[in-house]
Length: 234
Image (cartoon, rainbow, N blue to C red; front, side, top):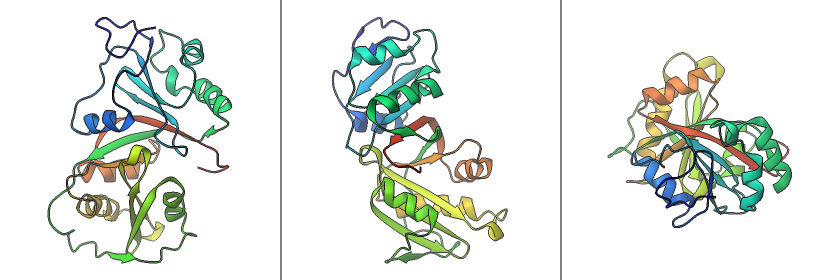
């Protein structure tokens, strides 16, 4: 087994954490500094009891879960770079942790923008967000300190998610789709988030409209992520 500071890591080896944790890895990735594309898998502790899962960057995966390193190494094919996000491994990891993986999302990031949010779309912050709205309900399950803004035809949420990172999500009502509102909401999130804080978004790759909206808003893909939860739904 190689360590995170090995000079010549073996492809597919599991790397023990030497320094830093998931928050440090994410902060570096947000600034364009990614783990080495060397085929290794790093293990870091869960940042909280709520958050466990896998993030894959280019030829480097990070497992954030409180598991035995030897068990993890035994599950992965050293020659398969896609193994950490495979259905088989995520199922095995979920069984080990008593959790389930529901999806593999594209992980995107963008810096905040200075100044107030643009007037279009017009946003009103909801001080008593309705948890029955599926987008808001999901944000409340997976994030802390959630704030919600409503526009005519959509909502945008911002909260603290995995490893305390600032995460956003948007929802556009069916009748308002195809008008650029999604890109407007995603752009607004970059103004509404705390200044100087990278803004993260997890997007189902099949949701092409949402992917296009976040790309248009200046978000860039940085990797893929699978969260494992104890809940019946995602």
